[in-house]
Amino acid sequence: MDMVALALADSRFPGGGHAHSGGLEEAAARGLVSTEDDLPGFLWGRLRTAGELSAVFAAAAAHGARRGAGAGFWQELDAELDARTPSAAHRDASRAQGSGVRRAMKGAFLTLGVSKAPFIARPHHAVALGAAVGLAGGLPVDAALAAAYLSVSGPASAAVRLLGLDPLRVNAAVLRLAVEVRGVAERAAAVAACEPAELPAPGAPGLDLLAEAHNRKHAKEVRLFAS
Image (cartoon, rainbow, N blue to C red):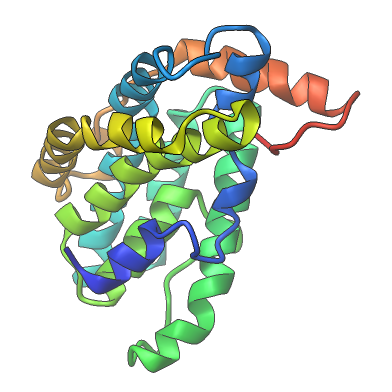
């Protein structure tokens, strides 16, 4: 796996991912996840919906960066991901994390020999992540693997912080998804060269509803996570 993709998937990467639970906080508040036994199902569902979507667009972004795509491509790619994200709360969370990646990578690109990054002002997270991997020389599958992994590692980490779950069992739950994560990444890489409008659009209505509910509660009371 590419070094930049590894760095982007690292929980220590200063892209703001620690502030997002991927719907886990709201799921926990509703009693949908409360123990180590509840977590695997939530993670699997998130991987096969929101994770698939992120992996697809990260792979496409990496492909675009590697071929030196122009501004029009990046605007279209970002707009297509926007259209596939019906929840306003999800869109805001994605752009917040994308902006974090953009800020964190700005200085790193100079070290990597990248003179100009194709980011729009406030990109979606998957687009920023994939572009960063591609600009650094990584493959679409590397970007997709990082995106797929983050779709489960973030909520898993949040579960430990929110619910006090056993971190050893939580990490084991993430590792048991290794084959699924790899499969998501490989499927995403297979369509990376498609036109943005032709990219798959896996949906996650349940996660969308959780995101909107969390956003409403966040405006009224203090929550640990922004999403």
